[in-house]
Image 1: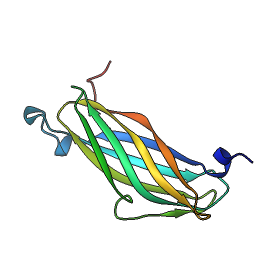
Image 2: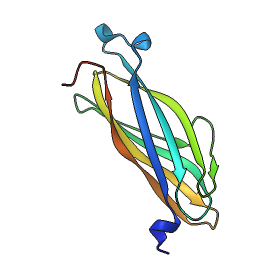
Image 3: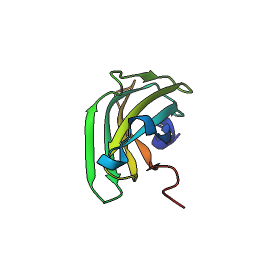
Length: 127
């Protein structure tokens, strides 16, 4: 088995605009995002930290790093999923998020689980 098959976490993201917390007149656009991590590898692995790259529609980049997610550092057995929700605030009605989770396998091997880029967009802004 290859190392990439042994250590693999798939990440799915869904984002939504939160109109009740947004104020377009003040350039405040709030988005919720929902993440599901699935251990598709062969060994248990723990999420240690995160690194987000958030880019707004004007090209302004914000990087966020920290331990765990929502105060947790979940351990995922092979086949196990972990889901959580969080949010981001932009100064533009569109943007993107991407990044990685830093993982530690039960056998001590460390690896990154890539978070594919996903769109943050206020409805009816993109055609």
